[in-house]
Length: 188
Ligand SMILES: [Zn+2]
Ligand SMILES: [Zn+2]
Image 1 (tube, rainbow, N blue to C red):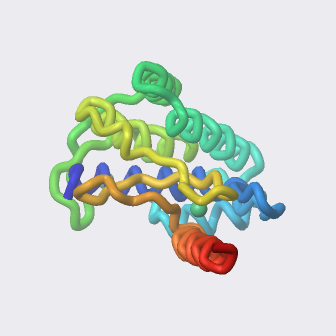
Image 2 (image 1 turned 135 degrees about the vertical axis):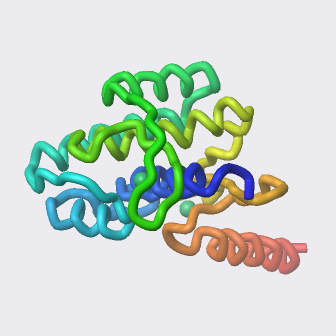
C-alpha cells in the first residue's frame, strides 16, 4: 500500500468523479453526472454517507467541485497545493478524530450536515494533502491513450500504471501498437 487505506479510497473516488465528465477526444461521450439520478448512483457507488439535498443546486455544487479536482490533477506542485488549500478553505475544514459504525479512529474534516460537494471535496483534498506532502504528485496521471483524457491515480509500487480504467484504453493501445508493427513489417 502506498498511502493509508482511507487516503487511497479518497483518491480513487476523486478520480472516479473526474472521469464522470466526458473524456474521449475521439467520440462524443455522455456526461455521466448530468442528472439527479446520476448523482444518486455515484454517491451510492462511492458509499458517501451524510445528508443529501437531492436538488439541482447540490448537483451543480458537485459538478463545480469536479472541475476543481481536475485542475488539481493537471497542476504543478505549488498550483496543486494552492487548489487543495482552496477546497479545504471553502468547506471550512476542521479535522476531528471520530469513531463510528464499524470504523476505528479516523479523520473527518467536515460534519455530516455540510453540503455534499463540500464533504466530497474535503475528502478528496485530505487525500491529496498526503500525496503532495509525500512528494508523490506524479502519481496523479492522465490516461496515456491518445484519444483519452481520463485521469488515474497510480497506486502501483513502481509507478508503472499508464491507462485509465474507464474503458479498455490499455488494450486498445496494445492492439494499435501491434497493428503498427505489422504494418511496418509488411512495408519493409
Ligand atoms: Zn467516518
Ligand atoms: Zn483512458
